[in-house]
Structure formats: C-alpha cells, structure tokens
Figure (tube, rainbow, N blue to C red):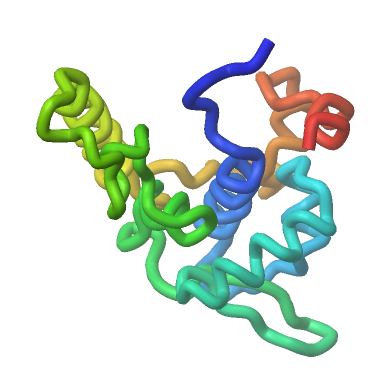
Length: 165
C-alpha cells in the first residue's frame, strides 16, 4: 500500500544520523560507518546524506585516521525542520503551497486547509530540537538503535530497513 504524506528514507536516515551526532559528546567525532551501524542506515546512502549535511553547514567532517563527523553547532540550535530542509529542501504539502503555486489558489477552497496543516506541522518540526531528541547512553555508555534492539526496545528491524531503502 502506498502511503501519502510519508517522509522519505533520506529524511528518516538524515534525522537518525543527526540524532546520533546529538547524542555524542560535543568534542567527539564519529566515523560514518559507526553512525550507519548504530542507527541501522545503509552506509552508501548515509555517506551521501552526510555530504549534504556538511554542505548545508549542519555537520562538520574531520579527515584522517581519527576523523569522522560531528554537529557543526550545538544540538539545541538545530531543529528537526532544519535537518529535513537540508536533506530534501523546503516542505510543501501541496503544489499550491510551494514557491510556484498551482495557479488556481485564488478560487480553490482547499488552499487554506493545506496551509493550516502545513503551518502546524512546520511549527512542531521547528520547535523540536536535536538536543531534545538525543539518546541517553545506557550503563555501558552505548547509544543507538542497535543498542535499543539488543535491550528489547522498539528499534527498527534492520532487514526491513535495508531492503526497504
């Protein structure tokens, strides 16, 4: 069944990576393979997403044998919305709400409903900060969806994740 209004895998994986980075110590850097493993994201796809996030100024990368990725600024300053828009561009629930519009807005009775729904969604996404979504380490200092699954939590099934990408 096709689901309308479903976010893309790219957004989902970008948010997972950013939440993971928000969960590590601010001065640490993490190799992208570690992020992929811990957050159940295909490595090839994550590499492209991280490049986009670096280009958009949300993530910084460090080269070398001890290199990796970290947030470019404090997690309390990065919203869910900023990550979504960095990865996929501006949100528009319907063509009538994007920059070009549909040309029928003046006579359309649905525009106000689309606009109201989009405004409320953007308000929620704008208010959600990565610092609020950061995962707390367990007693061994581990973070990530892999840890949650091992502890019997509600982590995504990696087989479904990779095959559904």
